[in-house]
Structure formats: structure tokens, C-alpha cells
Image (cartoon, rainbow, N blue to C red; front, side, top):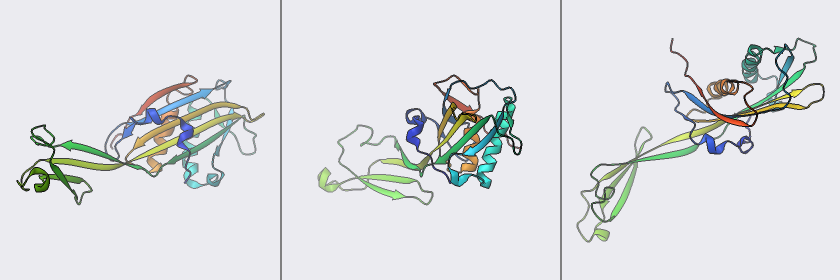
Length: 229
């Protein structure tokens, strides 16, 4: 699968808050930046879609995503080039998802003398990972630190962790006649799902929401979850 350089997207600061929880009916949120110059108004101009990564060209998976892009462009008034026809526009698409990073969330227990401020922090943690993947931290008074009172009482701090993935989509439109760049778009999102078959269609929908947008503007796009049948 293709992996793009997320440094090129330049959206890391905005994507920090664009977190989509996989497996839940949660709207997909993406940060989108679009730039254009002399992009012609849609009047039936023909287009062809190519992969930014040549290794993807002709692939079945890439073809599925290219069909989605073609549908969006057709909806706006462009048309796919016929077989043997030289297109007016060349659309290049690249997409990918990173390997993810662990995010840890701490939820201190109530009435905890170490976390509630009732006493000094003579605390030694014990970390246990449960069968569901959640991590728990149990505290007890250390006899060497506390002065001999020994363990047996203390608070707790519930710590859970999960993996966050960053996905991205790059889209460029060039004039076929001279290769001049007419449009550039970058979409980036964070999620707990690394499945490109779910992520890429959402990124494409975000890219074409309000297409082509205001040049140089970065916006947060929310894609509603699919309706349950």
C-alpha cells in the first residue's frame, strides 16, 4: 500500500484534534487544505486519474478509490476521458496511513490520598495489563518511603491506552496540455482504525466537500457516519 509523507501535508497541528473512534457511529473529521490557480470552471472537460505512486497504477484497490474520485468530479461537471481520448486534465492521487502511536489516558481514582492531595506522595505503583488491553496502576504505601506503615491501603489510577493512526490523501490536478499545476489538495485525519478501505473514501468525501474551496484555506470537514440499514 502507498504511504505518503505526512510532513508534506503540513496539517499536523490541526490533525491533533481530528480523532475518529473506530467501531462507533462517530462522524469522521478531517483537516483539509486546498490550493488552486486557474482551475477551469467545470464545462465538461475530460479527465484521467493516475496514481501518485506508480506501483499502485492499475491496482484493483486503487481503481476503487479512483472510481470514487471520478464520481465526485463528474458530479461537479467534469467527465472521464473516453478510451483513446487525450484528457484535458490529469488527476493524481496518493494516500496512506502510518503505523500508529500509542495514546495513554489517565483517570485518577476518587478519594485517593496520593492524587487527591490528602498526604505526601510516598507512593509506589504496580502496573497490571488486563485481558482487554487496558492497563491498571495500583498504589500502595512503601514501608521504606513511608516509615514502616507497610502496604495494604492506598488509591488507584486507572490508565487506559489505545493506538491512534494518522491517514492522509493527496490530490493534484494538472493541465494535460502543458503540465501546469491547477489544484492541490491535502486531507489528514486521525482515527483508531487503520483500514484504508474505510479511511480513503471518507478522506475523498472530505476533499470534495465544497470543492474546490478557497485557495490557501484550511478547514475542518465532518463526514457523517453511514446510516445503518
